[in-house]
Image (cartoon, rainbow, N blue to C red; front, side, top):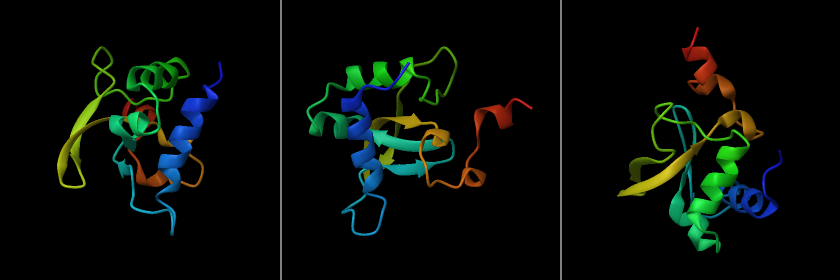
Length: 107
């Protein structure tokens, strides 16, 4: 299965903000991956539920608990924010040694 191009482009735009000159960061790295506020999908004209479904279908999300919801709540830019965490293995340019990867935890 391939990720929907619309979701892929929205995710890429958020990730791009981490680069120099990309503007204020619209997502951030966390221990298990890359946190994307759901509002960033809305801002780009996507329903968060559609983005969640597309990312889950291709196995890109990191779940806090196997049977739990796919969303996380954390402070982002000084405010409590609901978002998702994308597995860092799907984002080129991130140093995987800096993350706690699920398969490393299972060993």
